[in-house]
Image: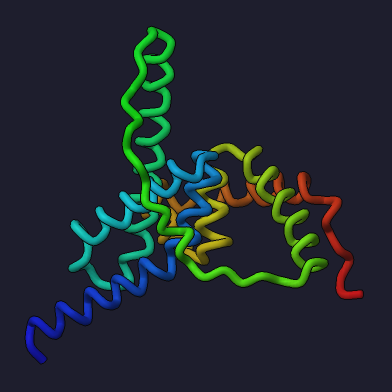
Length: 190
């Protein structure tokens, strides 16, 4: 196989990886930023950096790298937002003339039955409220481990912390979520 064909296959695999992770990354960014446009910008910037700097890395390294970049971009977002507040406090407004591309709106949408949608909406809203109450690091660890299915080691690499720290944050997040969502707990199948 030629180098061109190898590069083409690698680019296809990276494109598939990014397509598979886009919606989940957007939700994670939305939970952190509480703003759809900002979350979309963060995810798009993360994807661009992934393609530009890490496309040549082995496939198994992509998930922790991607979420490390996402975590860093979210940190940058929060720092910039704090600086923008400081500028507004002094009477200066940052330029916000950029328009964002609504790529997430182009994803397919499956519409469930009304009763299923209502139940899912109520539980989803309760989960979002519970996740909002978690400290940022606990929320990140919970989403990487439980929602993204990453290992302790991958999560630690993505967040730049130790494996023990990941386990501690996950334990605390899980306990807090159980407490916040106790009214939705079931005793088992009906």
